[in-house]
Image (cartoon, rainbow, N blue to C red; front, side):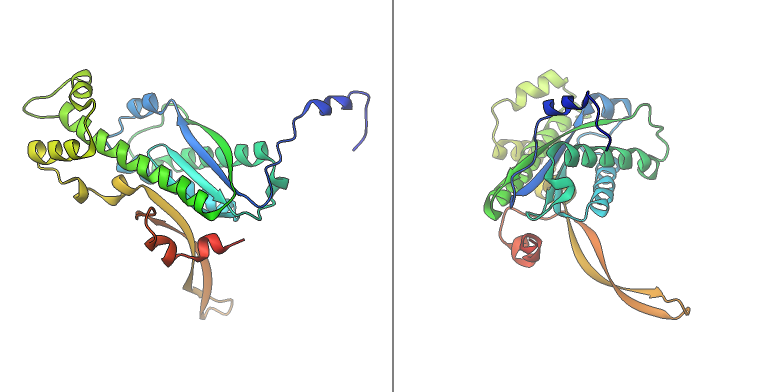
Length: 261
């Protein structure tokens, strides 16, 4: 690259290289999604279209960045975990984070009509992102446990909240619903849902209660060979699951996920 007398300005750039041998987690969050979901008439407390669109955008990101070993999403957020040995863009935080966020946002917009068939997008959504490093398997698991616990807490509250607001016989205002639920624990919310609305929280779709876990696995697929004959090939695909990751069962079954250096 040709040098010039103005090149000194590069000295003002900060070194944002992430620590080596740590998991890199890029967490993205919808910015102003309360307004976005209202403008586009998202169903409350959960909109299948919106959640599945988030998953589709996340799958596109994992297909783009092969160093991602697992991802977890709930509501309008997603966390992407890059393997510890990742050297993508020399582990520069701003570069990795900005590309993941822009890739996710672009895929979200491009896939909108696949899920919101009759709802035109009024304006493009925005997402913010951050990069965090986690040094050990256990600390990374604790991070993912935190996000799944957050999914449960938020979904239980929202299910109770919107049940009160949409009560056909005695609808409450949002302020009234907030007052009713203030200081209630999980048991009280479960009791309210079951006794007043006949809702068994544990019977709700796992997508709502558990969030979405994305991981890779090898699958044998029959494809057409060059000579037109069927050929069986091994393909690495991204799976979307809605399971508990706080316990040991998931990690025992998929021990290879964090085993990938």
